[in-house]
Length: 162
Length: 159
Image (tube, rainbow over all chains, first blue to last red; front, side, top):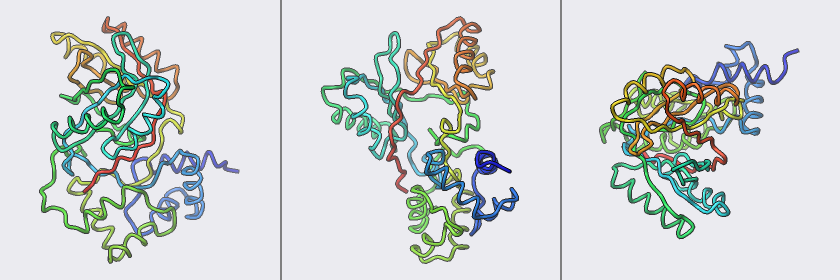
């Protein structure tokens, strides 16, 4: 008997590159794997409920759609308020990634938020909006712009970053 | 296929294309005909909607259609790392760092910490092994910034 975990692994392997653009894409995936359409849909729904699949959607290319400027904004916020504030920052529609990370020697920032805009001026304005939202609980901040992509491989499992 | 990094011409997209781009970021239902409802809303048949999605992919407005998997929920381990690299050594260090297949992507950034990369491994203990090896090979500290908390993201590109 094939376990759900084994079926899930096969579905994941078949769809990390995407789904076919046809009216019944799950039936087509089922055909590739020798499964029924109902099993593919059931297992993908189960994975979505478990958080393994976030959603089935398009990934827009934000460069193509004009969001050509992006910066990694970093903030030193009070640990006691960090989760609450991070939730508010992550919910902003111009922030594509938002994490708490440990501080390090010479690095006091614990909240990271990737900000996207049409120009660097716009990104600076959006950064200022985050500063207003954080208020006095933020002790220091900076923003790091990428000047060069040194490597980008097909890490296709995570949401597209920049 | 390399990622397009320049904007498409403003007239490359019509209102229907923009509606498709906006609506399809939020996720389609898991059902036998996932495009049917959206097609009806846009007064298109399924084939016409799918043709438009293919065309958007052709011009590079869409990079992908399919499930977004949470890599960590699937068992992978990831860590953002940063290094301070002197300008005269930068290219040599890029070569040493990028030689590791676990380095998934790597960016030069405007900061004293000028090299930022993500390690992607199958197991958490491998992250530490690779980071230590990079420190030994380069003679430079590798700062580790594993994520401690990930926040729900409301980011959408408004087409």
